[in-house]
Length: 368
Image (cartoon, rainbow, N blue to C red; front, side):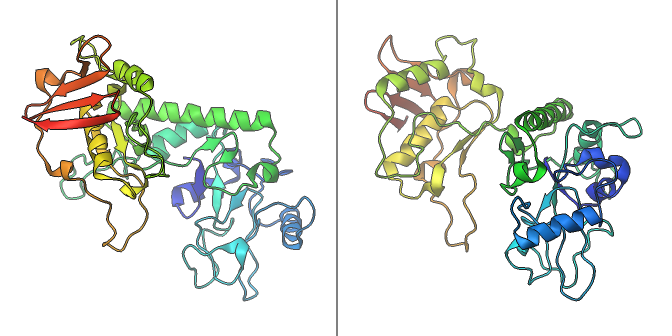
């Protein structure tokens, strides 16, 4: 959503067209005109300064690298080489994430790289950057408008994992030299962040009525009570009873059968941290109990990013996850405190009673 990867043809077509220069961030002292893409005396000088490590040099190479005498491709559009295909041998500035046997080819104008969208981008042929981003780049016949190639019937593909963004420190998952390299002031970064957020709001408003979704619309903070720190087991300490009680009084509105917790308005991810490493059986019971006690109609418990494994290193699977507790009784009503001031909260399932006692600091699942 913020990275513009020019090995995608939809991005490359815009990046290589001077009319769309305002849609991409540039190195400092470069502007929309003259067109900053491609090789020029100015970008050659910038690259030479980088190569020499001169004072004030940019932190990423404006030109690519290839060792057979072929002229490098260069660009005044800011880009880094993170997770970018490269020809091996260029050293640290050109980390190889996908090998090009010859000079990498992302078109004849700009080198392969992770460029950055400027969500403030102006109008071209009656279309602003935001219009294109929402209605062509994100929503296309390869995503929500996809059709089954055999039947021709709609077969939408979700937008997946949109985890890059623009922040007050610059774009995520990009070189930390971004702000210095682009010469952006605090106000400039603020404007970039604001425009990015406006685009994402427009995307959400368009996607949700279409039945679309992406991962970052999930509420990833389902757990409020069970241990969430990575220092387990040494920091396996329940939250204070007063905090526990206040939290569950907000989430457990079962005394008012017409009310639902605000957390139920989103898909909830109850994410067990660190792949469950270092957790005890009691910890897993607590995680499972809190999930059953506070979950809404759309929720999932498990692990988020766990890292790459060899197949024998799968995350632990608690015994509770293979038990059948039934479904919430009373049409799925939320949990409730057992009595005024008890600090004990319960929720009835068809095959189990789920309880959390804030004074004890643990949950319990009792089969019926």
